[in-house]
Length: 414
Image 1 (cartoon, rainbow, N blue to C red):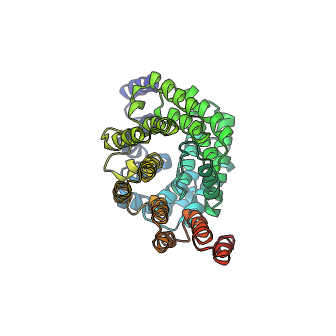
Image 2 (image 1 turned 90 degrees about the horizontal axis):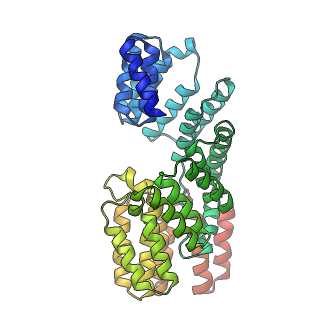
Image 3 (image 1 turned 90 degrees about the vertical axis):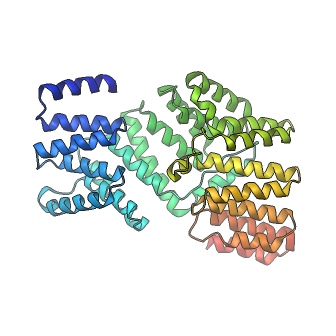
């Protein structure tokens, strides 16, 4: 459909190159196909043809933000702000203000306030724009601090940890807003793949596996070639401890898109099967091969690429550490932990790695070192709840300190 639309728009531009509205259509199409540079050119032409076009100015600013041109975007938004008393505030302009503030490392409360305002303004209009609402959902997700834990080898405790992490107040607000938008989008456009995919992610984060399966299956049905949709579907089965269905989901995905073979989840499932069969050495080999694969998604040196797939890679690092620990190869386990900490320095994943390090310290009988690791998790991070839980268990099981055990939970509750 996009190819057909592109052909028609290009033909229209040949016939009438001086049409601002056609330039806007071309820009929208280029943005939809992730050709930001070309979209920016279209918006510039549209603005030159019609200097009063707010849509052109909004589009121009959006492209500048996507390209990381923060200085020019801020300048353009400043000019647009001066026109607001005359033209009125639009949802798109407020959304761009939120994006700019996020790029400028502004306060998250203010960013969320702007996103909420953009959402409210949009629903006051009669025109419903699913694509814009999806952009809002992505912006809400961008504020999320919750690291999704992937269940491995049928560990039900990890599902419980996901539910605990989703109880974080800010996380609840984000998930509620995103879910509200996605449900409204799917009422109008039930076949929108991205909306089904993101709604499945929300259910998975909350531990609602049946709902997650329903929407991930819908995402797969809409586009059977989408690697991420198949990977998510397999992840949910893995979260249920259903290795057979996880393998089957990946096989179906591979038959539709062979690039899925490089996805970290493929080898994660293989390793899970090995561990279930008691073949720990084979699982270690599979996980090491996965980490060594330079073509796997998220192995790029670019942090943005790493973070997109971080939940898979952190799970792989985690299971490799615990597999070495199971084989009593603590030196190898420490080496992998150090590698993971280097790869994810200055990210939220460091909190999860601190909890893993504490588990290793406890296994070696070093209680004080474990408590120091857990104490380092800041109180404004979602993993703080898990760290306090681990700390409470350490006080109870290693020191028999009932009062300190209770104090940990009382502190979190307060």
